[in-house]
Image (tube, rainbow, N blue to C red; front, side):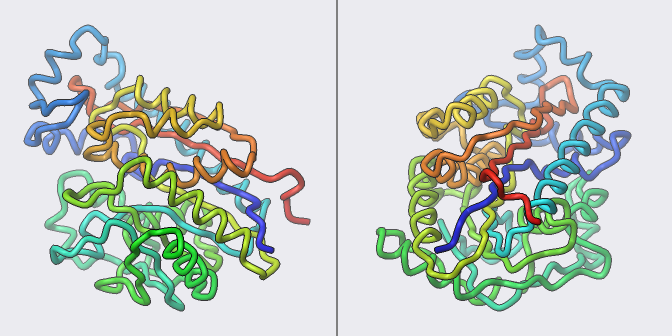
Length: 337
């Protein structure tokens, strides 16, 4: 029987891979866009007025950015060290796509990759020039120089697909990734948690961003429990890690929502997340759904959670930015010899 020996939840936002001196590069985009926050859509100026009493001017200084960037990098280094110490055989990666693979109007709600390998490809200069402000400096955080080819785990992936189908999930089964490209949610895990020493991996896609077929938070929890049962029924004696990438609240930070998510993790009660209204899971905050299958699986498996850090990284007086979270679960005695 396969054993889950480790699980990790990590934010992957561009600010993690951007020097703090460049954290305000995204603000012009923030000013152009409207933002979902607490059940309605806001302009940048409306958010500045709404949050005027929160003393966000103290959050958007270069000194504070440097402190929080250093704390984030320390937390990522800790997760990478834990992964290296544990040395699992196979990883199941939970992430979303932001029109990196599915750029042509076809976006499955849920999908599992079952190919032999997948490619993390460098962007061409023309594509880099089209990126929103502040994204280009973060590319090395999820794409290594020259790109990379990562090993899949087709036997386990097919087992997961068949088990999930039997549980009533209608999945997109992918033997290759559209465009032969790895989304940044997965590239981040390969680069920064597995430190470019990527073990055989099964990417699991969750369409968190794009209506009309975003799976609900409850459905994401059900997926986690289904995949847990599938892993435990796989006859091969392998050590499996679950790695989730994304979140926490952004592009507008809401610390109350983040604390509800972290409290649900600490108390092993995933319903603390799934009872949040679906209107919460929009824009970047939707990526919390990438964590939900892992949180649900770990609650059922009973592994103790460890919250390494929570760091709200504000970049403007409107409260825009990215709240960063870093969590792991590890089986007792799972450290590799």
